[in-house]
Image (cartoon, rainbow, N blue to C red; front, side, top):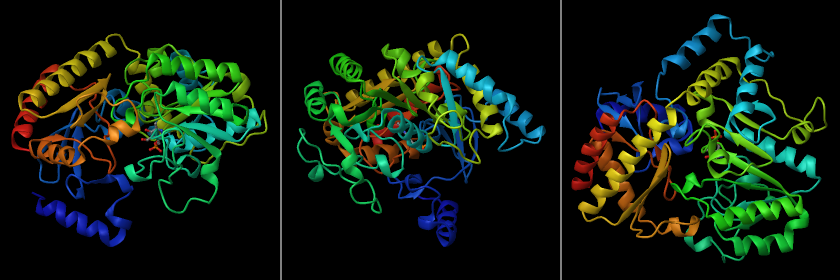
Length: 436
Ligand SMILES: Cc1ncc(COP(=O)(O)O)c(C=O)c1O
C-alpha cells in the first residue's frame, strides 16, 4: 500500500517535474509510483516513513561499494574542501586514468564523461572518425544509452521485432530523426550464424561492432563461446573495431571487467556506473593509436564543461582502488552464490517456474522460463506480470527491486552486503514469494 507521505510527495513532484520524475525509468511500475528514499547506508535504504529495505537495485548498478562508503566519502570531501575546481585539469585525472589503464585490459588511453550515454556517443563518433565508415553493428536488445544513434531495437514489443534474419530497427522513442536507424546493422545476440551472414553483407561498411559483453540489460545473458569467438574473428579479419560497452558490466565480476573475465580484449570500451562509486563519472578509452584521433592531437571532437568533474574523479579513484583490494571479488562471489542459489531454491520450493541467473554482483530473474534466456527474444518470453507481483511483494517485505518498465531487467547487490545480510534478504524473499 502506498504510504500517505509517498503519495503526497509524488503529487507535489508532479506539479513541477515532467511526469513527476527526474528520469523516466525512475517510476517503479510494480508500485505505480517512484520510490522515495530519505537515507541510505551500506546495503540498506530507508523510505520517507523510516521503513528499512535491503537494496537490490543499487542505484541501477552505480553503488557497487554500497551507499555512503567511507573511502568514497573521504575522497569527495577532500576534493570539495580544496574548492573542487571545475573544468580545469587536475592531478587526480591522470592518477585515475593511470589506475584504469593498469586495471582494464584494453585501456591505453582514456577520456572522462559524465554519463554512460555520453561515453557510448563519443566512443561511436571516435570509431567512425578512425575508420572513416558509418555503420555500427549492434545486437538486438543490447542497451547503450539514450542518444539518438543507439535508441533502436531496445525494448521492442514482440509484434514489432521482425525476422531474426533481419530484425527491425524499431525506435525506442519518438523524436528520433528519420533514417538514423539505417546506420545500424542489427543481429540477435548469441547467433554466430546470423552474425557471419551480416558480416558477409555489411562487413565492408562497418565502423564498429558495439556490444554488451555480458548482456546484463536483459537480466544476465552470457555470450556463448562460439558467439564470442565469431565476434572476435570477424572483427579482426575485417578490420572492424570491437567496442565493449561495459557501462554496466565493468567491475561487476572482476577488476578488469567483462573483458578480463571473458579473456577478450576489445579495441575500445566504455565504463560507467560503478566506475564513479555513486558519482556521475563515465569513461571511454582503448588503444592509443585510436584514442590519438581525439582533439587536440587528432581531429575528432570530445569535450564538455563537466567532463571529469573533480569530485566524481576523486570518488572514482577511491572506488576503483577499492575494487582492486584483496578479497573484494571473493566476497562478491560468495554473496552472489548465496543469493542466486538461495533464491532459485525458494522459487522451486514454492512451485514457481523461474530462473535466477547472475554473474558477480548483478543478476536477472526470469519468471516463467525453464531454460536460460539466450537473447532479447527469449528473455521477452518471461512473465512480466509475475515479475511485477514479485517485485511489489518483495518491496512489501523490505527488499527493494527496481522495475525499469521493460522486459526482464537487471538487479544487483553491493559489496557492503554481508553473507548474514544475504541470509536475511533470503528470509524476506521467502515470505515475499509465499505472499505474492
Ligand atoms: C550497457 C549500458 N550502456 C549505456 C548506458 C547508459 O548509461 P547512463 O544511464 O549513465 O547514461 C547504460 C545504462 O543503463 C547501460 O546499461
